[in-house]
Image 1 (cartoon, rainbow, N blue to C red):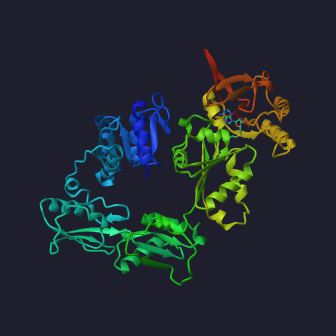
Image 2: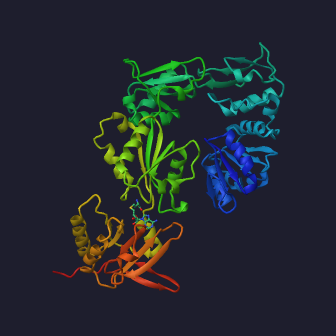
Length: 547
Ligand code: SAH
């Protein structure tokens, strides 16, 4: 996983930038009030550090080791996750791996030490003696059993000689006491071996399962095949499957159960549902065939980052490509240099959706941004319209996700109190994509139904008269003292909330950045001195008169 470089003050920024050059995928986190130029900002250091730790994110904190230790102390007992945690002096003069020695903390410390030209403060005994931790083999290799590994390393530290069976190029530089007849053995093999006190077993990820047919029991089937050939499950580097299985739920469930990636390519025809390819060294799965692309349609919420779902932030962080109306793309940032932004005009929705599918079909992770919720007068429908009936099968195989956001009506309603606390409807007053007569009819019906209403797209330069006409219709159904909430730029800089009555409401009070909420006959006010009154619609409704 990509490390988080966490800054407490601006002083650490030059060091943070050096580390970012070393790890271009890393995210620099800076405290909102104190740090400028960070990739992400945070309000509370402790909460942020603990959340990163819980999410198993490697942490490089540019601050005193003591601060990090005290902050993470409450998390340590749980041991749900143990990512690498390092403290780096703000001026780059020291690097201290604190936690996660087995999750690569020492490796990171050594790499950072080289980058900053300082000696890493490595204290792990096996590591000091053998130059690197035998229990943290490089990428492409996995240790079979960590507890057995710890016993083995303490034996070696006591001076036992050892021999290596198999290919372990990274051990060549290590000052192990090698002896050809040593009873202690480091085995590098994809094969299963019974546990033995005098053995350290390391599996190269050198087996690829070629899957031609994905059924419900696929993971089990692959595990059985491995067992049948005496191979360890940990030796599995990944699955390779034909393109037409890319959308298979069973295939992805199996890959997840086995903890390996899936790649896709044109495979020669064969009768076998699963075939194992055993290579003589670890397989770089990323170089096989193509990955499955992802298209996520996300909702940013009304504006304020705090109102954005964490799943949406995570999606933005993993995106290769970000598409959307320029204002919203800017709102979704900051982005890393390796992320490609495709800003378009607000009206080119269908074209944008098609472009998104084309990119995702090439195996890229694509995010399409909407403000508020993507399913409310926004991009999710446009994306599904583009998919509906699309001829290219590759579009249908993309990992398509819609991630919700807080819609403007809900953000505005919350600020005002609870005007949508009873039945309500959401109506767009834009007649760009629907006839104005339909809008009029819906306003009449919603008026008769005595529901509260939230109006999106209430007015624009191209649609100057529609709101006035809509208000005329509403006034046929609602009393002049019906409360109306106007929220402009809610959760954005310069946000404004007004409460007026239907009788007072003029189209001039409203623009395209305004959310208009008109109450029902039961909507009422609670005065608040010095600010707009609370507006709420009670949960109950008077009984209808008996006929
Ligand atoms: N998908 C968006 C709505 C897009 S339609 C959502 O779920 O919020 C655009 C309309 O939404 C605007 O014309 C305005 O009426 C309303 N709107 C969007 N963001 C707003 C905000 N922050 N404050 C007030 N109104 C907003």
